[in-house]
Length: 195
Image (cartoon, rainbow, N blue to C red; front, side):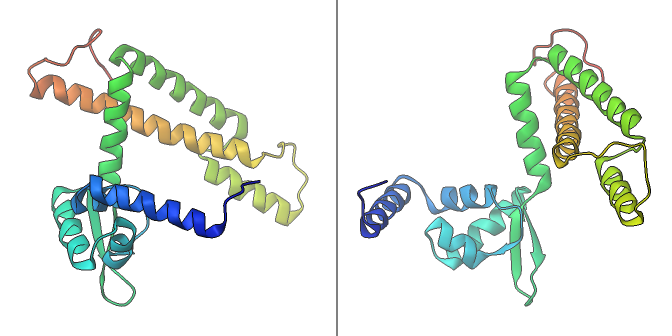
């Protein structure tokens, strides 16, 4: 157990916030906060987390929306809300993959993931983990005896994660293909890239 009092933790938190504020610009803090915001929030909420004023947060959020990093919508009470754009997340994930995985290895991994998805579909007789969950619920509610085995939530989550990872890998491969043409072939490739 810690020997620190709640006041000491508050002091530490204040110190960390002060350091963050001193070492970054309001734009950097707003971008950092919204980079981890996947549900729509107000500029006031972002401002509080980014240690800046709502007016400053709104200005930077609108700039980030113009860049495509943020999407806006109308909130429950008519105000503008902000969240990280799905496109920016996909591009970020794809860039990270391309930084750490060669295109040949990426093609191999995509093939392996596709094979695993095919195995899931064949084993459970449905096309998606959502369909599997619905089917199991219907069987449970109908108390029908079934030869199909009970599927634990971990299997469903693994299947969903596999689909998400395959989507990111496909996006990375598409970007690698596009970069070959845009950069005139300056991105090193292990061999020809194909999807």
